[in-house]
Length: 200
Image 1 (cartoon, helix red, strand yellow):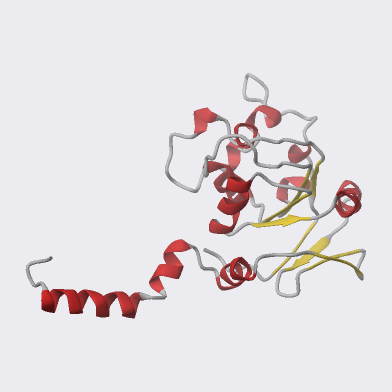
Image 2 (cartoon, rainbow, N blue to C red):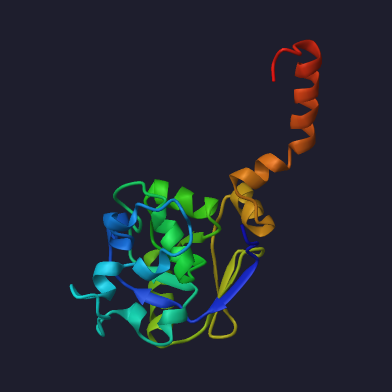
């Protein structure tokens, strides 16, 4: 998992509430267990027509939002089924942070496990950043100092669980956290083998 420290981007505005995981990545694209290649199908039904042609009326099909790294969204983002393909597709598209008033719990937890920083803000601050996005203005996310910077010097602070913050900054997913205990695991296995050698 890539380390997350700071991020600067023109955010993509998506002022819709209750965006569910089927809207993020429709069920027909859940056959793969690979984390890569799903970005092209992100918000598939909003981005493409029935023939597979790009729709010109959806924000992620416009410049500069096609290369945004930050998504500003409405409340209850990521609701619906618990598919982990949702954060995979967002990350593969290029999003590394999502800012919204609220998130579905499972989706919120899955974001951290996949290197995406979900930030909860009150609606007033989300509206401020949505306006910046609609006006194609850069914003910066500083995870270490828990600040969002816009208009060069204006600051919005955000809260985050300190353990999750540490994992993102150090680029540690569940496997990475386990591997940090590698010496203790090896020591335990040696001890077990010496006491119970029949266990392979």
